[in-house]
Length: 590
Ligand SMILES: OC[C@H]1O[C@H](O[C@H]2[C@H](O)[C@@H](O)[C@@H](O[C@H]3[C@H](O)[C@@H](O)[C@@H](O[C@H]4[C@H](O)[C@@H](O)[C@@H](O[C@H]5[C@H](O)[C@@H](O)[C@@H](O[C@H]6[C@H](O)[C@@H](O)[C@@H](O[C@H]7[C@H](O)[C@@H](O)[C@@H](O)O[C@@H]7CO)O[C@@H]6CO)O[C@@H]5CO)O[C@@H]4CO)O[C@@H]3CO)O[C@@H]2CO)[C@H](O)[C@@H](O)[C@@H]1O
Image (cartoon, rainbow, N blue to C red; front, side, top):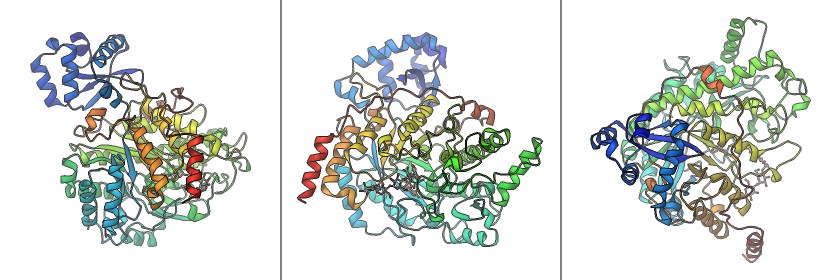
């Protein structure tokens, strides 16, 4: 054993078996020192396990294959000494619930506190682990540059904590309104919109010149257009101020993750399918790179590559087109030409650098806190089974059969110890329009696998509100694609799932009863567990991001890899057809 430890990092580490691969979980420097004093060589296997369980984890290092089998045998031996419950706890997937979009109003008030408190208590009693909430930029910095007001959010967090729930906080640098389910309008701060009056190019723009005020264009990330600050500096200041003003909530482990808003709907994407500009499902959407800043950047890179004549596309159709009706996406379309590939690479790389830069700022802001950073990626499942993947392209995901558009995102996140938070977990191919070549199941399988292949944690959400058993069963399948392992850690397990969203419909009796069963099944039939360590979520102080990766490093991850195999259905079902029938009969007598 000593040789194994010393052959990795020379430090005592937690050894776990994950996704068929072996890792050495390296501990923070202070623990390492303690371990070193004890002497790695003297540690027996059981002591090692005990020590590992009691300690926090700071870094993951891949163990050479040569020693993997030896470790596996040790781990299996160690696991046999765990009780049945302890083994089952390794299958536990925590469940969080998204709070209503307007829980803090646009006027910065926590409204209807009593009602919310009642609902939160019901969630807690149902076994829910925590809640997720947007923290709207348009609310907290609405009074002027750097004039932050966190008071309503502090009241909200206090209430959530009193109800015994954990918190996932979204740094929502986008507008609320314009997307599916957006029942309230919370625009970007007025002082930013005012700048947009004189310089509308700060906003994403489509080919015909429509501006989208959901999120600032990537073209202004590094331009000092906002009272001396760049967009990235604004996001950075905001996160730092959040840390300063929420330090008590961060220090005691109440806030468990920060979902870093990287685009519209908080997702790392372009606003290619805006409902408020007439997009309807399953339109291919439109590229959004026609503001003067992005256009100039494209021209500059094209020129430097020897193609000053290349422009951003003018043949990619409009929001509700089908791919085949456009020159860009049709058979033998522009997307297959040198010019098309150059554009798509630039467009998708911009998204990667944008995410990387803001996550780096987030990492600096939250370094040392016991939180995880996370980034959301949208589930663009329509036209996924078409050769051209048109809807993914316009959103910025350059994904093809022979080019993985998601693994580079996962690799970028790995540098920041980030979680990849993916959506549309509830969707089944059979529920979708065949005409739109939808493939939500294969998409989820691809993206989650991409995350696991890059050794990062993967979490998820449902895209649309669902209260039926089929939707929950699909989420359960994705949460543990190969089912539970009664002997301990399952082969594959999601880090957590956030259910979208708390509403009166969810709290309605029949719906809530099914939801409670769902929570129990996500917990692998175990009781609610407040101690995350018991299900191997060791959230140590956030370390500084790893050194910057070159774009070439990131693009290596475009090499397609087989996704992990998925079972056909979950082994932890909330019930099937018979239960659905009984639900229906009951609802007739309501
Ligand atoms: O608070 C955090 C953030 O919350 C919000 O953002 C989240 C957003 O709400 C989420 O949707 C999700 O974002 C993505 C998502 O990942 C993407 O997949 C995509 O969503 C598209 C979706 O995948 C497509 O399928 C399509 O949806 C259309 C659907 O396919 C059509 O069938 C139809 O749905 C109807 C449905 O047919 C109809 O039966 C009925 O269904 C309801 C049912 O009646 C009721 O009993 C109950 O069971 O609920 C059912 C579902 O609601 O109504 C449905 C809706 O009309 O139309 C669908 C819409 O066309 O298009 C979707 C895009 O529109 O894009 C999403 C947005 O990017 O994750 C976001 C992040 O958490 C806020 O927007 C953010 O600001 C917050 O920060």
